[in-house]
Amino acid sequence: MKIKGLYVHIPFCSIKCPYCDFTSIVLNNNQVYEKYIDALKKELSLYKDFHFNIETIYFGGGTPSVLPPKLIGDLIEFVYKNFKIKENHEITIEANPNTYRYSQFKEIKSFGVNRLSIGNQTFNKKHLVSLGRNHTPEDTINMVNDAVKAGFENISLDLIYGMENQTLKELEEDLNIYTSLPIKHISAYMLTAYEDTPLGSMVLDNKYKLPDEETTTQMFKLIDNYLESNGFYRYELSNWAKKGFECKHNLFYWTDKYFLGIGVSAWSYVDGERFGNTKNLTEYFDMIGKGKKPTKFREILSEEDKRFEKIMLGLRLKEGVNINLIKNKEILKDLQNEGLGKIKENKFSLTQDGLMLINQIVTRLF
Ligand code: SF4
Image 1 (tube, helix red, strand yellow):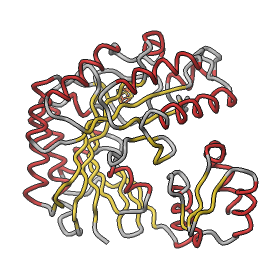
Image 2 (image 1 turned 90 degrees about the horizontal axis):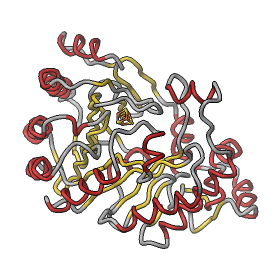
Image 3 (image 1 turned 90 degrees about the vertical axis):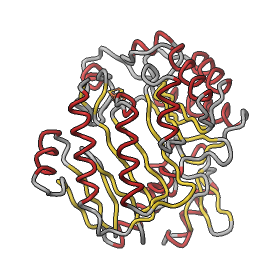
Image 4 (image 1 turned 135 degrees about the vertical axis):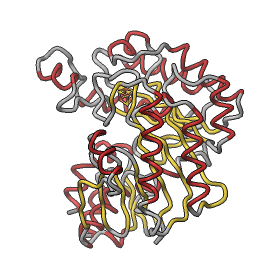
């Protein structure tokens, strides 16, 4: 099987948000950015013997839009020159609302970028502050308008829910603004207090209170029902899109396709093997400088591991999983009777209530 997706991790941000557990550092230095893009090209060259037929490139982070567009273009050109790329490929860049404007969008579009994923999180000023974000609601609205003016049709906005004291009314006001914008995709995530983040410590010290499970369940249902009745359909647990605007790259992760990740902390899945890069930028530069792949972690999946992953990831999808993957068919019938799942033709998928219990359901299936 060929590698279809290329993920490029850009580990630089203009701030560090207190809830963030992604690998990123606060840095504004064009020389380091150039050195990093150069290292990414060298890393890619180390994989020339792999079989590629690239359908998607995804610049994630971090904040890829802290880079000058020309550097993004350099890397894309390098990929075009050296690897097999399928026609009609998708190239996504994640952008934070107070970075690119019209001229930068024009420029990255000319390099082939055709999808934007904007890290908005919320339009509520109070919650933007509590999330430690350094942008305003107007920044996002201006960014979306500039992107549309520059010719971007495929725009996604992130939404975070479950902040301290967030009400359902506030969430609904957010959704009202999201659905009034010319965007095609929304990714909605529940705020999570990861260990080793400032938010994690605040929650442990009772200085920040996350809502209880009943409230977050109500919030998820509100998001799902609101978006479904406003032209977006949920194709994955956390992702809603207008028809035809699903994120092709992320679908590769959930449907067991091969992808290569390059850059600090990036993960890959190729030939039944998962491997991940060092999370340390200095070590990354050092290994690349020595002509070595910056791989730090490696795991070969057994047939049973692969089956488990296919079920776990497939249940996140609207279309569900092939029932032949599940050995105990009786449980599927039980889940259907409990209103948690549906069997249609040869697929088993979760209902809205089932999705809320996805982890318990995966445990039951195994
Ligand atoms: S901007 Fe994004 S990647 Fe950077 S610290 Fe904030 S959440 Fe993390």
